[in-house]
Length: 209
Image (tube, rainbow, N blue to C red; front, side):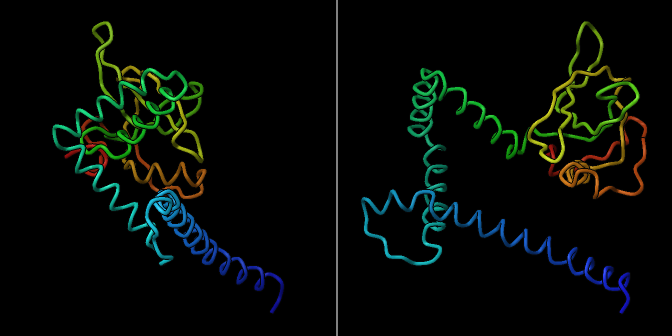
């Protein structure tokens, strides 16, 4: 086997194993985090045996119970009181508010990014992927509030207001655009097209009931 053939086979194996290894590592890390999220504190009150996964089960049960509590009248009042108290603490208020808004944006079924577009950013000679967050009227003209994420971390970015004519609709879905950003441009859809307004790709799971 010559060097070129060896290199090709080795890289093929690498490309197969690395995503599997990263996925397994990420799943184990998340499960370990969830498992130890509340379990150590509960053990101060109740002696819980060392059973693999018991912390995950307890955490999921706690999350469900909190959600159940938040849906009734007393729970809503308690949450309002909690928000009021948190709002009185300067640094904690900022962190709590930002985290809460992020969670609402990520998991809300009513409001989310509706479609993917291209915008000229950071200059008129460049194109960047943007997600339409909202539509509004400014001084009688239609504008789009476009979130332009940074790669490879799409949770940071810029919210920019563009006139309707400066936004370029595309056939990219929100999921496809997110994959491009997360991969730093390596996982790119090979046939990206500009489309007419009203024909943009939009996912039901990404902003429409």
